[in-house]
Length: 252
Ligand SMILES: Nc1ncnc2c1ncn2[C@@H]1O[C@H](COP(=O)(O)OP(=O)(O)OP(=O)(O)O)[C@@H](O)[C@H]1O
Ligand SMILES: [Mg+2]
Image (cartoon, protein in one colour):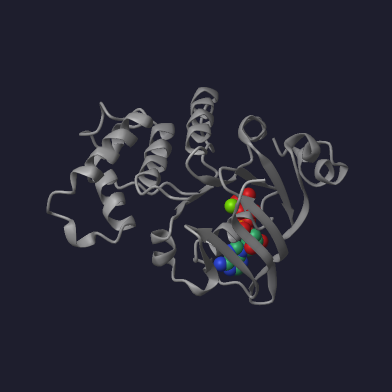
């Protein structure tokens, strides 16, 4: 088996008296594409927020492994978590429409690397090469000097994925990356993820079951803040409890 990159250990998250995540434990391995699925309000986004440092755990731990080091993520500030290789794409798009596509990539490169001081100066050649390479990868190189307003919804999502990739994360967290995409754009996103997987582990929250089936290595089903079941897509979609609370209720 591959090496673990993330271990979530008995993690709980509460908001006031409300338990949004209850005693969740799971291990994500290097180069895995892990899906988190489940009904609205199951706690999927809340859990991603805890991994990237936006939410606090009320109990438990989240351990991240990178370069032979072990990090207790709940003890690390959000901006530092990015610097140790955990990249996060939020449910709402967050590209800046007032600067060009290329400038969005530059901004991602400097903020993610703590190179804020180099804004206004020329970026190192190595980073500019990385940006060009990523723009080619997401199919936006020709459009690099345009503003993001020219992009389709899908292209904007890809730009965000490219902005994450530019800093070479070891673990990428994506919240509903194909929501609102048509079939062809979804298909293209699946292809991108399968390439990204070669260099990094990915945790994806998604409701699009065709997409999940296409790219998932392993699926974790959350319901009411708890893990209902975990396994391959085949196992999960034949689980009667999963069918009852999610898939059989129009989860697709
Ligand atoms: N900051 C908060 N304060 C209070 N309650 C919250 C907060 N954030 C989330 N919740 C609640 O926690 C529960 C889990 O929400 P979460 O956003 O994680 O669900 P989700 O699984 O991502 O759902 P969806 O598929 O709709 O995005 C919901 O009941 C939500 O209302
Ligand atoms: Mg959510």
